[in-house]
Image 1 (cartoon, rainbow, N blue to C red):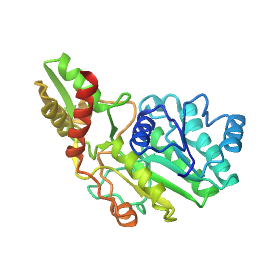
Image 2 (cartoon, rainbow, N blue to C red; image 1 turned 60 degrees about the vertical axis):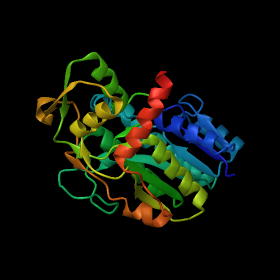
Image 3 (cartoon, helix red, strand yellow; image 1 turned 135 degrees about the vertical axis):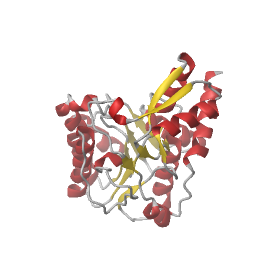
Image 4 (cartoon, rainbow, N blue to C red; image 1 turned 180 degrees about the vertical axis):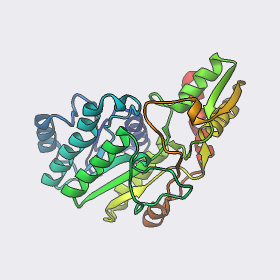
Length: 288
């Protein structure tokens, strides 16, 4: 088994990778929290790489509070750009392949077309801008890397849209959810599978890839599916984004083309609603 370090190992995706590693009996993997795997601390990184000599690093560490990022610009940039640059430099020094998780928010998302890896990037908020800067740092330093852009990530772990909707739907009689922002939900367990498949493929097809579940939906329809599958009765009202202003602007149409990753790694990507069913089944088991 290849030796793997996972930064951001206690976050949503990190916990999914951990769960999957246990299912696959993958023992040569170390999960690092934000203290023992502080990507801003050169001394910590130096000691880690020297001791572990990983063949792969999976970077799930990121500043992901999209609205707060508009006010905490410096902190967001430190984590999403400078921290990533630190990882890239150590991966280069120790001949380690980096698997880095990025976002669809590197795109403006103002046109109704599938976004492929070669399309022009133009982030419209601080979070997207800093994630793009992190991608550029990797590309400047490394040749052996996989950047995986994903979207609308959720799981049975940590805080996310699915868990928030289930909680609010159980507490309120009605909810308003945005209907004019379109994208694709991604079950973090499916992304974890994709990451392991890439690592275990042995393929050297380095570069940037798009990964989300299949299909297209709005936040309103996503919420409707969550309530239907969860058997939660709540009146759901579709509202325009203008009726729910946020500090950060969101893309209105952010649907990624996954042809590259499917063809390169022979991947079968699940449909978003099928994966949502699986996630809610897991949540129901955890809540018993």
